Image 1 (spheres, protein in one colour):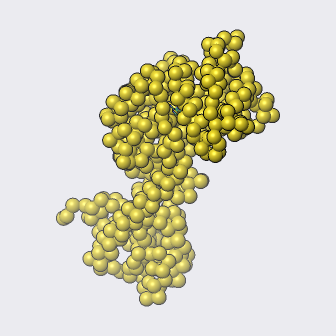
Image 2: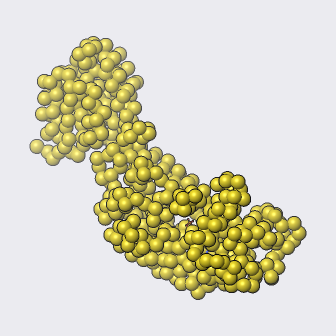
Image 3: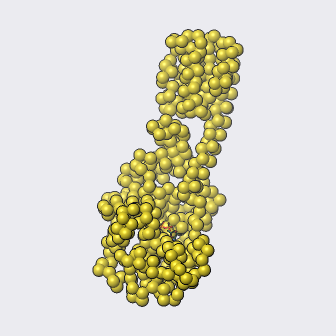
Length: 467
Ligand SMILES: Nc1ncnc2c1ncn2[C@@H]1O[C@H](COP(=O)(O)OP(=O)(O)OP(=O)(O)O)[C@@H](O)[C@H]1O
């Protein structure tokens, strides 16, 4: 007897003798052969056993001759999973029924009683057809998933990753070195320090640069969609799963996976993520087959994960797994020598965008260098954009920059913090958020924009501070 082929087939017929005969024959050739006399079982059996081919009777007890019930179930199967290949069988074979069956989506039509060789030939062709359909379906979903993921997150950074300070030169050197290996990298730093830019820089400098980098903001996905986003899902796995979906791990396979805002992950989900990283394979929600993945993991957080471990909010074993190399992006107030470079870069960019010719006065540059920039480079970029828009003459008017941030403003020439009653950044951040919300009469979007935060980052802070 020849070796069994990999493949899962389901036979559906209300005649137990047919089921036994089909099972005995097919079992000799295929690894998974399931039978049922109840077509209502089809959906669950398909899901449970990864069925690829179904041999379906056209006539059940209720409706013995017309074949209508067979058509009904054929339609249901195609709806559930269009990659399944259905062979219809009937004892009342006639040409018209065969033509209608094929028009309705069946791959072939078999008359009972069958000749064994004929049935085996039809089933073998059905499996070959099923493989083609699966391949095509996978490619289509992969393209859709990649398009979506690329549109959402990784169209590539719009800005250069700049820095001339010793601290940033050190960051660039570490990125160059670490990118060459496949080591998992954890990027830490306050909000707006350029963690996402760093992740792109790592990917671009890596051996995987020709493959995609897929990003996922862990702070923005709901608990219920976590597994589906990461590992994908099978159609029908839950109410909203209208079709199969490829998860971010699989989409990133061969390339890099960037998990942003990792510190926000609940413990339960940390365990799930750790298991996937350890096993290097994922199983889509509602699926039975594990899929091997080959990813380079880059994570980012503005949380102190070691402190989170000490407080029981983050798993030590997950931290060990993700921080083979750790890159800390320094806040802007620790590298004020980068401020002129960044101001000039964004001034050139936004002056060009808004078709303005503007220069910055020396004392204004000094004032910007003396400001603490709690929102870091993101705040600086937004502030310069706002100033470009609001300036009247050819001199950049920075009053809007420091004015809008009066809650945390510092005076030109003074060291950062001279006007503060506290240096606690979280307190200062809370005050800035409260001031912005008050200024924009509670409009979160406008307040977030003024603070240089994304809406997601703003909502996370509102939640964190209970505002
Ligand atoms: N070194 C830099 N050079 C030029 N632009 C920068 C630099 N760092 C950050 N930016 C700009 O600041 C903005 C925020 O950067 P990014 O999203 O990478 O920060 P982040 O640390 O990931 O922030 P968050 O933690 O809030 O997600 C972007 O517009 C980015 O282009």
